Image 1 (tube, rainbow, N blue to C red):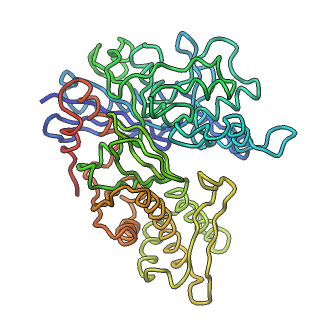
Image 2 (cartoon, one colour):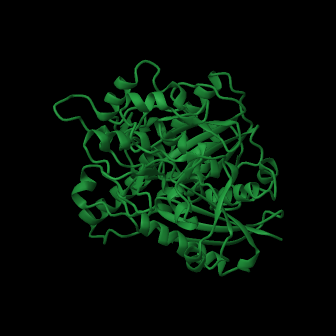
Amino acid sequence: MPLFMGIDMGTTNIAALIVEIPSGDVRAVSVVPNDSEITGEEDRLRGRSEWDAERAAELAFKAAAEAAARVDPQMIRGIGVTGQMHGVVLVSEDGRPLTPFIGWQDKRCDEKMPGSDRTYIDYMIELAGRDGFRREGCRPATGYMGSTLFWLKENDALPDEPATPCFLPDYIVMRMTGHKPITDPTNAGSSGIFDVVSRRWDSSLIGRLGLQRVHLPEVRRSGEVIGGLTAEASKKMGLPCGVPVSVACGDNQASFLGSVSDRRSSLLVNIGTGGQVSLWVPEYIEVRDVETRCYLDESYLLVGADTCGGGSYALLHRFFLNVGRVFFGAKGDEILYERMMSCASKVPPGADGLRCEPFFSGSRLDPHRRAAWLGMSESNFTAAHMIRALLEGIADHFRALYEVMIKSGVSPRRCLVGSGNGIRRNALLAEILSAVFNMPIKIPLNREEAALGSALLAAVGCGEISLEEASKLIKYE
């Protein structure tokens, strides 16, 4: 049977996966740590997030080679790529990176402008005018491509030579094929300067923001084959030269395809460093506090995305490590996650009145918001209650975003699909999510949902299966 490879350019790890079509069996998976971050300590304290795009490409080639070595590489018929939808690296006409990849966690656009009380995001909204971002599917936010380009323009930091802004997955495809940068609506729609209704760059908004001289990439249909592996890339990846490579897609959409077998009845909650609640709709609609993102065909996903998720839980883990180190002489490198889950599972639902707002680094809508535990008393001021309350706070927040979608007229879903390591490695969080959403929860059998989704989309782009047939291949634990 033919094989298809998917590569997911994650923030923490880079994964390569090979799936067999039409059985849907995953034949190989390779995961390598993403060590391409180059943010200096001083810049990290300022909220910067900068990465070496070329190093990330080499890591993608390494993961692909390791996966390809476990199968017959001659059977691989296509390659799909996905990864971080937000962020930007500017590349020259000959494909050289002219800037670092500025990632989705970068906070520079939340800074105050020189001599002003307004942030760069505030100024963007002012320039855009009333309803200026209405057709973009999302409001501008720090870390988005459009916002970062605006910051670079305002600080005279755009390259002097002609440059094309790339999403990281698009940069990887460029390195594989030697083709000029190309994107698709799922990635372009995450920029904040793309009209998700017409599925074109919003030239009017781009003009108002003063970004006319930025050479934005061509937009192609999701999954479309744009070239074959170059000799250099094929050697590094251990694959035949000329294997078709599809235009990259957004990781949210790839995860949805790689997790959800019935898009009409299911709701996806993905918890990684941050978190997302996503549901499919056939046509474009606007929902308060929710993004409307292009899906892989002509339909859309409603997405409630926020910073609270596994990163909030990891921060509490670091707090406990610090307590152990300071007061009990512990080394500070212990793994406490299992113990945290075990003790929190003994606390009843509701955490005896303790509530947590787990926004340590702000929220998408309010970057200045901060975390809080509320309702502390003599009976619930314990580590176990704090853990339980934080997990319930994460679940409650995404449930609230789902309720906003339902109030907009979207039909309620019957089944909850849980994906991401934040759910897979925390059975208590999965249990809490099921209870809070009042739905049975299903966990996909494959752990690399985004990589699987990109591989399936490559199979669709190569004409092997349809998008609907691809979703039917998803298996659950």
